[in-house]
Length: 633
Image (cartoon, rainbow, N blue to C red; front, side, top):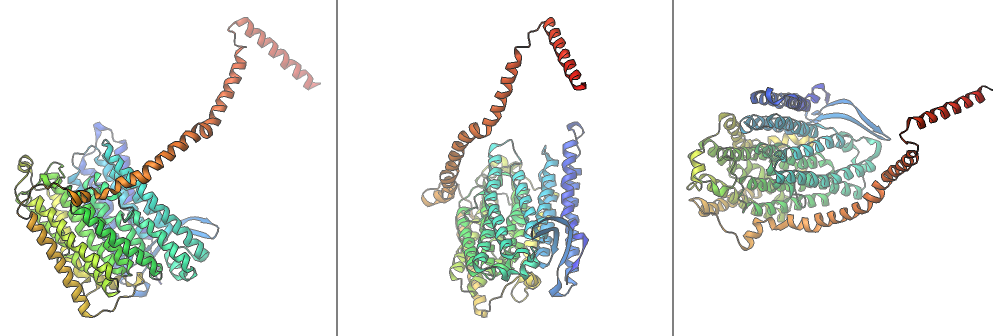
């Protein structure tokens, strides 16, 4: 049996309390008595760091328990009961949630520290850190929730925070529209999540709605309901984790400050969908069709995003599409029932993607907020620490051995090959080659060759230590985290085994070596093409044909706007013009007219002469006297 521990609730509580405290300070501190930025920064980092310390405590306590009893729980209070549904505000820490806790709090803490330097001078410094603490706290609720309902609280919390942070620079209309887009697209996915929970409760009923009870009673679901639940929950995952067809919000999320992008892409929001599917591995593992759909949607998303990433000019959008693509790999992993491989890629990706985004932020900071890679060049000499750490992150993202991304990505491709999903393996291999190409296209254009903007180059310099130290720490993780689950070691897979329902494929050593060899070849081909085109300097290309089509992202946003948004707005406008005056305003205006009629009727008595008002008083007193006399008799 697992243990009940009260400190679990403190892990999300620390950053949530920080959000409230910092937010109140920001609101009630007048401009003339504004607190120093360092005070806000220190207060903002306390919560995430304390949460990381508590996550370490969870890890060591779980490690001390027998393998089949590795879970800790805490019921804070009874939230609500409706009929047979009884929901506690409960928290569950098992090997899966513990791994998520460790890297979410560690990387979240590093991003908060980095933000102290990056956001320096911003007029809304305090508000930014209040939102960041709220974002991290919401993600920790999502990870620790012991039931789908509690998970959904954190799920909606990160959705809210993404809106607040993406549209943080609200003076710019485009930023606000990007925040709106993220919020609306995620609401579409969330509807699938809610419907999935509803069908799940309908199928299982009063047997218990926390994960442990669901796992024990999943046999109550009919095959049809189980498939429906899996697909509806995956709709929610496509929204949060930016998969086809709901991926369109994530590239626009670059409108927010760069540390926000790092937090969204590396440690919080976009990993939620993969985590949710892995959390329900006891269900997906028994619904093969749902797993195949998840895998194919994932790998096709990886391919589509990789195509887009090859032609982007904005340094943050290159990384944004790489995130969408890598998330596709993760879903391909969990779709072929290699849940530990998918989660391991979530783990390694958190390090190298946070590193790349924060490295990009360092470049943007040095270039006075310029994001177009074709206005950069030659920065290797100006920013050696940023360059070296970003190269490590790029090697990990591109899948170069022995960096972390190689081992996690290769495990997914090997699992697809070993389980007979040859199409998914082939597409994944192609995406690996494309990833190496667009990643090093970015590195070569930004850091190599001659400066394209001499004035900006002359004023560029290495970022301060508060920004470069987190880069160095993340670079260590990006370089070495993969060894935790390399073939023959499998530390992460063994650790996750009690939380996941998976059957590791049995394949010959030849298949493993073949998978690794082809991955290495794909990396080498991709980086060779990138070097030949951009390694020694290159001018900004003029796109035409397919390149222009891909640069404009296949006009998917325009298609959605024409087919969905504009017709919806037209129907909504038509309904509004009918309902608003007749249904909403009609009764209100009728009451107004009634009072006007009553007022008009009494207006004849308001003549403005004192003698007339005296007569009214005499008549009124006479009537009152008559009434009283009649009552007494």
